[in-house]
Amino acid sequence: MKIEVAGAGAGKTTSMAHRIQEHEIPDGKVVYCVAFTNAAADSIRLKLADLYGSIPRNIKVSTIHSFFYSELILPYYHLVFGKRYQGISTIVLPDKPQHRNVRIHKLDEQGLLHQSVIPQRAKWLVSKKSGDTRSAKSMRKTVLSLFASYCDAIYVDEAQDMDEDICAVLVALDHAGVNIELVGDPEQDVRGHGRFRQLIEENDDVTYTNECHRCPQAHLDLSNRLVPNAERQISTQLVPRGSINLYFESETNVPLLVAHRHFGLIYISRKNDRFETHTNQRGNERLDDIRQQLVPAIHERWPQATDLEVNRAAYYAAEKMISQVDAGALPNDAIRPWIRRGLFSYSRQLYAQLAGTLAGHSEHDASKIPAQSIEAVKGLEHENCLFILTTDLAPYLLGNKTDDNKTKHLLYVALTRSSNELSVLVTKEVEAQYPRQRITAVIKPESQPAGCLVDSI
Image (cartoon, rainbow, N blue to C red; front, side):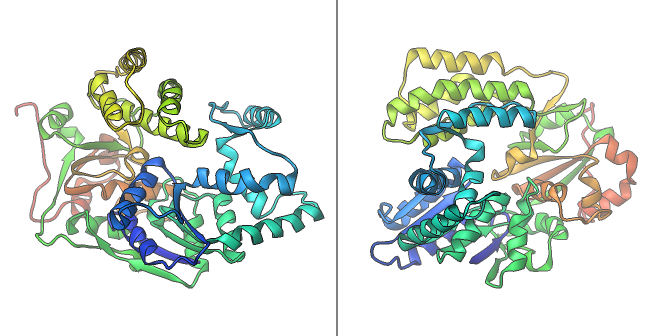
């Protein structure tokens, strides 16, 4: 197993595409390249198409869930467990674990595999399952041998997003003789799985890419405080630029700041009575409404696509539409680009349904500043960002806490989104806990005073 550790803005996807191009694929064998989102898979496809002109038939790109289902579960699961699945279900499951399990079991009885348990079933297939019979263990070895006979390598992008089940599958395939290459950044493990970090510590073949093509060095000086020495980054920007602006909420007219500065990204880790995010249940219902409207339209436009591919494309498009409308775009402006890109064909009825759903749910509390969660902006960048510092992240930024966990990873992501200007807004709660001088000494270069925007502007 080969591992490349590359931080934010290091060009991980481009690097992976070049490594695949340099890979000499033996006759009759296939290389898979997998990512964790449709957007990431599409990005890889574009880069490979640029390098090759068109993607060769012996290179297959997909999301990791699609790979597990199409290449492992669909052809082999029945050999080990005597069961064939007829399709994928993407219905919203109940929150309570016992209710979720009952719903998943009922779907299973109908021959439907819920997308949330695809990694678990893949692990059962190639790694282990409690209560394994002797025949299952024997057949599992046969399945692994068959798969390894034609799969030469698997490249995994954004490997820090893997959970325990995904990790177990990749380790099992590695032991079976498949070349596994992982590229990722353990500091962007915002779900706190910790499996990529574990693999880094257990393997000898680990390389580090320390260049950052996105962030100015001033920003990296902050984010480097959070990472091990081997993972610290150096900016490749030839012309030094970039600034860090510091604002204290207690003396800042925040609505005026937002209106004047035109931030491309505004994000916060923990909403409060002055800032809101769109991660509540109502938002989940809206997302599912739009996804369900898009699925049949995408199926009609792309009849050869699998159910999983269609559902993931619908989910991704719905998520982006909602994000645009929540940021102030008109519903029509959020819908049109997807028609132009050919995701689905124009239909007056569908257009009206989508616009109505988006418009009907786009309102927010006018007394609160709208912001995205840090999880939502992972993978995004802009030259002008506003990071709202709350009490959960402040101890890590100021050095009071150093545990390697999800909270510290959220802070790292927050500090590495901007390609030019990063503004940090210190909330009243943080200022109540820490002296202003200490906050300023960490965040702000000594040559520039902290910013202030008041009603008189």
